[in-house]
Image 1: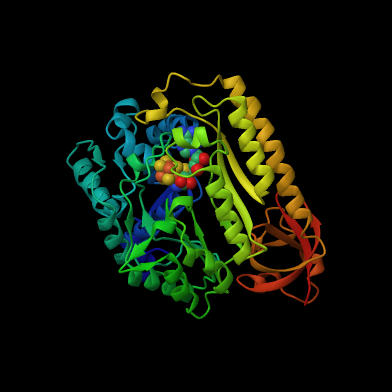
Image 2: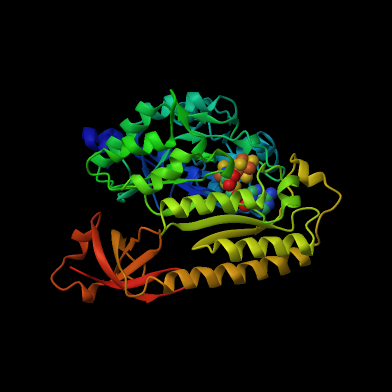
Length: 464
Ligand code: SAH
Ligand code: SF4
Ligand code: F3S
């Protein structure tokens, strides 16, 4: 329901506007899109499921690989005929492509009315007013807002009430923005700016507001979330405080950098009962030569030692990582070292990518670029190994009883879905629920006996 409907103002509700936000990229963009949706809801915009009938369309973009960035322009091509039909439509490009390319986007795609970066979306309602005013005068205003530090964004975030538009028992909370690491392949330090930590009290207040709305699992987000620090408290301390919130049952955080791990955060994986046994800890490569060229500032053995410490603190910890194959100069020997690291660590899940040269990053200029066919062949080999590990990890859950946080019916409509502590999707058929009402399961954590294991999910029956 929009604000206008709530106020019962008939004239205004006939003016009700709609918005559609399409999100690309990482969870930080997912969080930003939710906050944009909340800010727009407060300004009278109701979210709709497609661009077709929307007055405002926002593409919240990702610049991490070439393919991700190019998707934006093909989507803008599809929006063009829609805007020709609805001259009032406002099209915005947000996120990391917006930050990286700024006004160039409007030059390449004149259908775009506003371009704003990840640190400026709190100005959305004001920007919309500016466009409305301009159009009322017969102009076609084009706005580009790609400045402002993250600290200002965090202040503005506090002012937007957390009223999640879609109710899920699981929510993201961004606690840290930006990156100072400058891995030689990566655009993030340029698109998200320097590392900034959000104030502890603000994070706790947002978590409390979410729990009051029915949220029971929170994932703390940051490009380097384990670099979070405020008034001498580090991430382990923040997680301990969040763990005290009644009704908040599960805590997670992502993404961590191996360099920012400390003993207290490792210990928290054994001590903090609400912290889930799943860690996304990207390593990128198993070759020290490549890691050095990537400016990762850790070796393969540093990483393996870290993994051992985590497993000593929490023996059932499930590990996940990101990998890049075909980084400039990567030899067969380097790639074999990555395969060996994967064998040694044994992952529950992982993401792997072909290196994609990004404008403005040092590695893009290296003369030793790897042939696309070689990249593809290495990626296939790596993914085969990672998939086998993931399937083995899922298989190992068979016969166990796992606590599952239930969310909603699965797409097929005949089973309830939730997540295991290890982040695996778990499906429970309706017809096995007995006298339990499917809808009433939402948001509850209940024991499930795992009876089936698949490549990307588990299935089971309630074990009550
Ligand atoms: N902050 C996170 C990663 C953010 S980007 C970290 O440091 O781990 C997510 C993943 O995209 C990276 O971990 C990396 O594996 C991949 N990636 C980043 N830049 C890339 C590029 N130029 N080509 C291919 N993959 C890339
Ligand atoms: Fe990119 Fe490296 Fe920063 Fe991660 S740590 S966001 S990969 S520069
Ligand atoms: Fe992409 Fe920006 Fe996230 S480049 S991965 S959306 S920080």
